[in-house]
Structures are given as structure tokens and as C-alpha cells.
Length: 114
Image 1 (cartoon, rainbow, N blue to C red):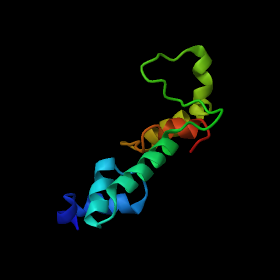
Image 2 (image 1 turned 90 degrees about the vertical axis):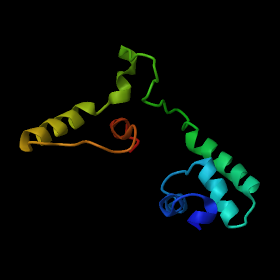
Image 3 (image 1 turned 45 degrees about the horizontal axis):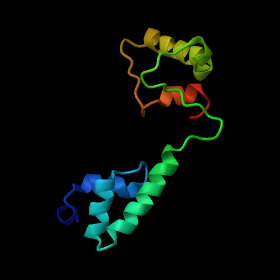
Image 4 (image 1 turned 30 degrees about the horizontal axis):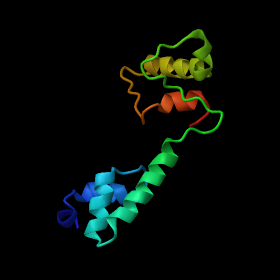
């Protein structure tokens, strides 16, 4: 199937897993390899992409792009002190500490979205 689609088995497996929205190119290649209608699946992909990107009503995203943060934006970081204290404690206890996760994971957790 990977040869037929032109993508690795890993890429196709990740697309099928449903953990995240795969790229449109991967979706089209995947459905073409299965002899399905790529245009129909592109429509589905675009609907899903729009739904995933749509803001939740009354929810202000924490990332402001290139705009600077102002005092009025402090609500975006409610609870940040607890996370910083947790990280400081982790660093005190261990010589090395790594923090990783999906983009904006800390912001979502700070703002009650995660």
C-alpha cells in the first residue's frame, strides 16, 4: 500500500490512527491507493479541517501571533504560577529536566483547555 500511495507505511498508519488530521496530500494518496474517490475525501478533509480550526465560542486563543502581550492578556495565563512552581521543583530534584508536548499544550493547560 505504501508503494501504491507513494508514502511510507508510518505516514499511512498515522493517517489511519486518527490522532491528528493528516495532510491533504496524504489523505488523497491514501484514498487513491484504495481506489476511493479522492475528491469526495478532499471535501471531507476540508470540512474537518475547518471544524478543527474553528474557535470555540467565547474562547480566546492564548497565542497572539506576532502581536505583543498586554496587561489585559494576563487572563490567558491563569494558573501559570502553579506550572512554573512545578517545573522549578522538577529542576531542583533532577539534574536534567525536559518539557515537551504538542504546540500550545502548556497554554491550553493554563487556560483550562487541556
